[in-house]
Structures are given as structure tokens and as C-alpha cells.
Length: 97
Image 1: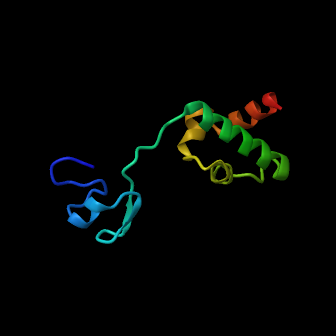
Image 2: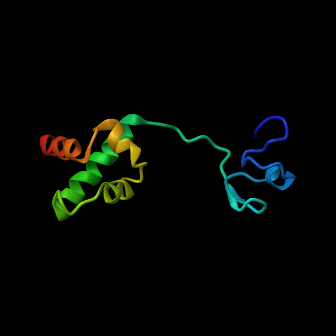
């Protein structure tokens, strides 16, 4: 749990002190007490697989970055962090295939 009065969900209600990874009844949001492990290689592979699938199904111009990240279940910023642009992601998937 968090220190000094603030709880994992960010509110100060004592109900949230007894829950973990559930809905906070006070502020109506999820209480996540377990940290998410970051794995850059896994994220990059997920983006590759999702991009290959979407580009193969619909083509370059019909696919949006949002469709790729929704399938990969990653943040949209990760595409730009790892590849710089949708064009660069497409080129990387062509090289990979």
C-alpha cells in the first residue's frame, strides 16, 4: 500500500485500504496495487505481430495506428517510441516478413 494516508488508489478513504485490484467505491476507479512489469522486447513483438496481421488483412492505408495498438494491447505512444511512425512500422514489418 501507499504511505502516509494516501492509498493505492490515490484517495484517502479507508475502504480502499482493504481492497486490491478491485473497483474503488469512493472515487469510482480501479485500485491497482500490484505494479505492472515492463518488458520492451515483449511490447515490440506484440506490435510486430499486430501490425503484420492488420497490414495483411487490410493494407497499409486502411489500417490506423489505433487498430494496431488495440490488437497489440499496448499504448499508442509505444509505436512512435519504437518505430517513429506508421510508415517505419510498416517498413519494419516488411523486413521481418
